[in-house]
Amino acid sequence: MQQTDTIDQSIPLDDLYSVEDLAARHPNVLTVQALRWQLRSREHNGLAQCCVPLGRKLLISKSRYERWLATQAGVAA
Image (cartoon, rainbow, N blue to C red; front, side):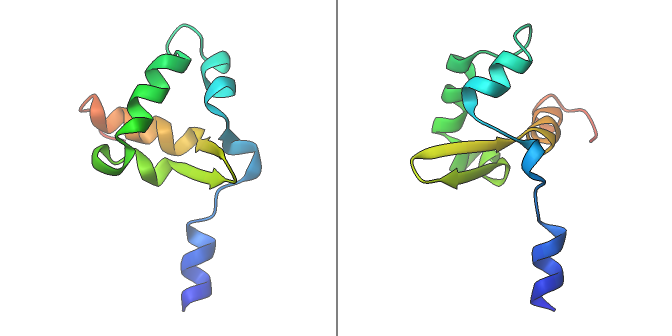
């Protein structure tokens, strides 16, 4: 049923971060500039599945971003 698919794809609100907040949470690994560079090509690099547009703001699911990053590094998620 359609509703079940929606529930399975839901993202908890405490898993969503702005670009700045996600970079600030992991300053040894991420920078705002690096995240924005990745996000510019999100439709082509698969990062779009990690993003939630909210008005003019783009939020990133931390858990989905971590899985995406693992696939980019060739690590099984």
